[in-house]
View 1 (cartoon, one colour):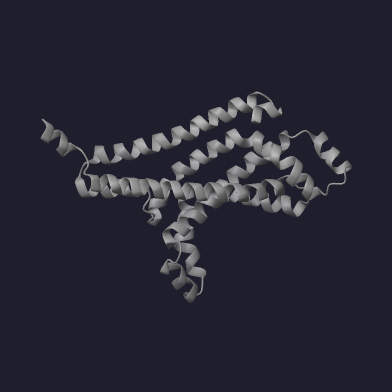
View 2 (spheres, rainbow, N blue to C red):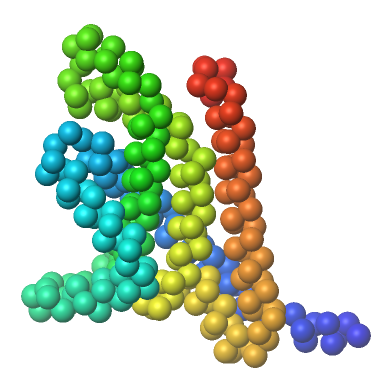
Length: 239
């Protein structure tokens, strides 16, 4: 009975493959979340601007990346974009210096895609900041850039935190599509383990468990942020 049970379990070697894939998923998700948040702030600022040029440019960006399948975007950055580069630049990219080309193309595609959604959530947060605070800051002599950076954005990010955490959950799940461009993340690793061992249930079951634990941790954080947000904007709610 014990021998039969051991035969059904994955060997430590294959568990290591899955954990390595999970770590790649985590690192990629963190980098994408950070990049998408920074770019999303810029998109939200442009979408909230009174300048027609910025409004049109950021609106086109959001429309393009939200209305194009993510898998197509990843294929574009992996197969299409390098084709228009000079041969020397392609060789440098494929050489894989600090980041492998697979990881780099996945990070670029995922970040640009996620930023379109993150930017809209931050823009909603900007809309939630009372207009009186902007007027008061301008009356004190703040420039428009100072008003945005020092008054509006800190409050907007607090308002937008719960939906932003939801976007970060999507980032974790969307990294699984990066296996299509050769990134050895968790989904790719589970396929490798399944192909090597023919233990389909164990390989994908363990990968599913890792995804559930990761997403569950972010959901707990999102629920906590929503409860804090429901207490109001007072200082006590954010200590």
